[in-house]
Image 1: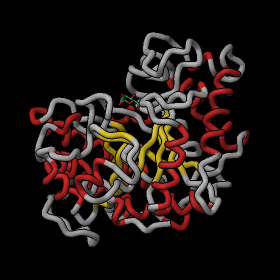
Image 2: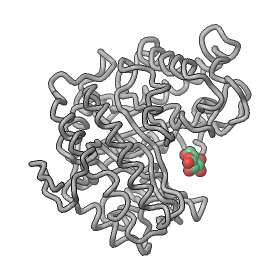
Image 3: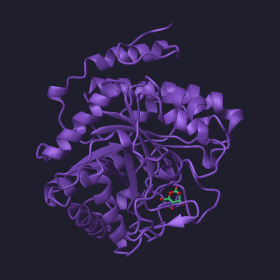
Length: 379
Ligand code: BMA
């Protein structure tokens, strides 16, 4: 079926799922949409509406993790990102990772100094960028890193009353100090999309589905939000829930902590394998994103593809041939690809200078509905 949504004309056919998503999104009422934190700052409320309105209009903000901290072959260069080198613009969404803050380390897990991260976040916000922060937290139970997937029920050991609860609270105190200091030069708190305990449906993190009961995950999530919001009085956060791929789409909500605790319905899924698996990737994830987005629209909340990418981008038309058909008209507020590691040569997900997929990337970001840094209003 060929449909003109009235927002953007395109030659891509609209699937029946997309049409339903579109109908659901018509009922998103911006005036009633509020973040879960009743005391959210004006900037957070504004960001929330910006995301909802983008979603409604089929506009998708494009993001990358650690974009301005480093890229392939460089680190800490002022106002640089691989995307800037290739396309002359930074992304619109800037992802950051705070693993290590819980132990008071000076640098995060990927070698980014927290002081520098702070500065880069302030700069990104000044350019009109949207900031999201993930947290590969260490396991408070045994000090192993987040990929400790051998421990069973770690979550139960850090909930209120359990042996490692105080230690977990100390972790949150450090997270909170970092977040609390993220202010703009004019003194306003920078709105942050906080995305803890992501990929919870997988079995690779200590908070994963194989090692913990759904209720434990929900309790951990609710405790964390209550603690940051009500005890630490942080009111500049939106909370993003990001399961990974599941065999059945309904499993997305199996561990969902509730509408009062989630602002953004996110989803993480990587493309493994390249050309051979591309069609399956598009088909599966398009359906999944439509499902998530319909559910987000019904709840008046934004939906987002919070992490994705094809490592090394070894398919030259990946951006327009795989990513775009996966996301276009699924009613998402944003999509974010993972980092371009400077320390692991084959671990990059964005454009890099000289890469054969760059012409396709430029075509992708030139689509009307893909929003990059140069289309944002500076603060
Ligand atoms: C993973 C990889 C790791 C990194 C971690 C946290 O997906 O990129 O190399 O340490 O994210 O950023």
